[in-house]
Image 1: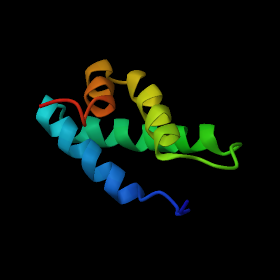
Image 2 (image 1 turned 45 degrees about the vertical axis):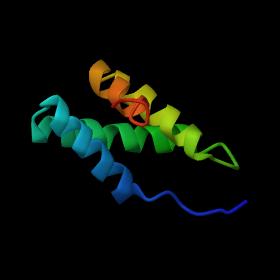
Image 3 (image 1 turned 120 degrees about the vertical axis):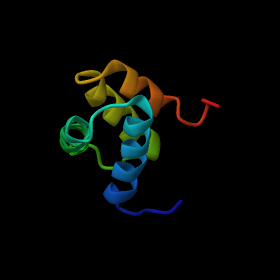
Image 4 (image 1 turned 180 degrees about the vertical axis):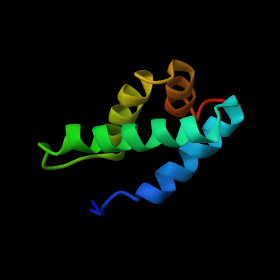
Length: 81
């Protein structure tokens, strides 16, 4: 098992790609992404071990507050063709 801090820049890059594909304006997408990552990180602070899946679920949960389609696409990014 390896341990490493999550790469916030990589997650933001992935989220921006999906936001652009959905036609979400750049300013709105940046706001959604920043808030979702900040709140997801805050919600996970009490956990000693955080998996990639934990982080993804927390980000999806936060994105749903701002844009349900965006959250859906991010959540299913590996399954969508």
